[in-house]
Image (cartoon, helix red, strand yellow):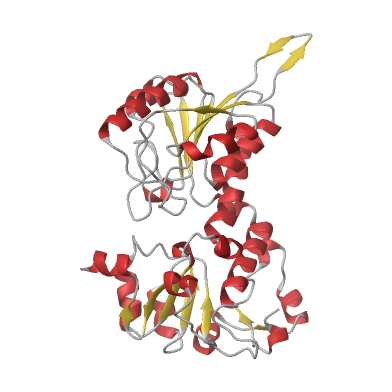
Length: 351
């Protein structure tokens, strides 16, 4: 699609190998395959997923536009360093979550995969069946799945767990998602007194202490009965809230499994370790915030489409750069420009 716009595209060797896209397939489309250093030195727009290394930044073309998923509310010092080097930085995880932005929303497209893979991962580790079975050797009760957070990942996890025959309960601080949860065949756990999250752009918000106590009590009751627990709760720029306390873990069934998708920001249990599997008193806790990478072909396809749709906002029909900061999506996603941090929240963190 870029090449049709007369834009030169260059990638490093084996960039698409895990997604079954060979260098030869890229070259057949008119893409130039070059060393990582050459890609960095030649590109006006650099596309990555994770934060670039200091060596990468040193090799990059001066004043390049860098686009990826950089968690700037955690890595604000890196954003400041990049700004001082005069790079324009767009972080796709800061995209305003509006209707118009849906086709560019990388968090949602990747969370969809994460929710799906979380259930399959749990099914592989869990030492029993998911569905109910009635056999000559006796009856098998269906697995009980508790999902904390009914965002994109949570909803996909509900749908996948139901397809596998599990009984599903769901907790979310936003009462507005109850209808979606129930439409997928799951039971919604209600707790009164939640803070209004309607203006948080689809994200969770901080709750009152009274609400947290009620919430913990209800979650504790469901967690004690659950076989599989999938946690997805994150708050932008803050550590993930502890939803499953040490006491709750102590009361969970032997052999039960927790998949913690909030592991990168600390996790929703006190025992979660990012990119590690921990067995705590017979409960397997898997910390993995990057499950989308387990399905690289579709993850890449969706991520690529998101990025393409976003770049349409800063590249005109002739294929030339046109940074329009009047556009709320361009402005909201931009972290650094003209040697300065331009995102207000990142500026405040830097002080």
